[in-house]
Image (cartoon, rainbow, N blue to C red; front, side):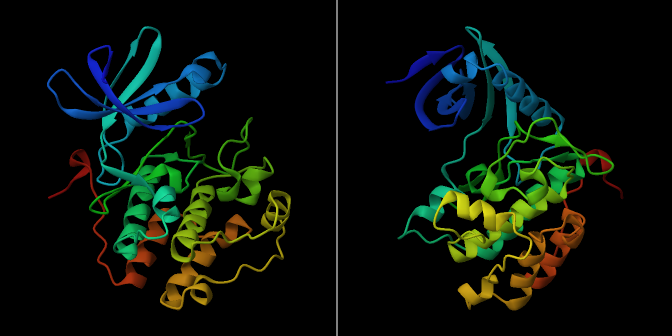
Length: 283
């Protein structure tokens, strides 16, 4: 049964995170939207409201892009802050990869859209810092949207240390795990790990226990079996591109998503058409 939340009717809780929950809802005009709001644990946390507010700031500043979830508005109801986003009928990439009998249509196109959304975020001066399959929504027609900017930071002019390490360890580069200075190449690393997992159904740093996995992750000499050796259908050039993304040293990775994305399009034989905001378009 739907419940009232301000001017919205909440119909179904789609997903819950540590501090937030997302509802399929309808507005006063009966448009279907997604309402993301702080849940109980988030409201009582000292840091959660700040992170939620930071994510809202990124949404407000980002220009629209096909592969970034569309922001509609925000507000507060009975002391609970919320944001209203487009509703995507589908599932996140992690859920899709966990379904043994469900195939992800056109994986190459999904990889391109993943890169397009992240390139747009970087071009607007932000790095995500929690890039992972759970934060990549895939619609029923395989359209990809990047979500959740609560941990995003402005891209620094040079690698910078941050007071608190945020993100998901399996997708974090060594410098982020160790609390060292980092920049947008942390996202490039995470994109590579996500692409590896999508194409192999495995994470690059194996281990029988979480502790062993972490040791492998932080071991510069640990050998990661290339994607094409797990999945012979993957072209060697694509396998090499992905391998470069999660190089241990940031200097060995692609320096920017623009360069990575251009090479990805070239490897896959897809023409690259960057999205140019109307205000920047030229005749």
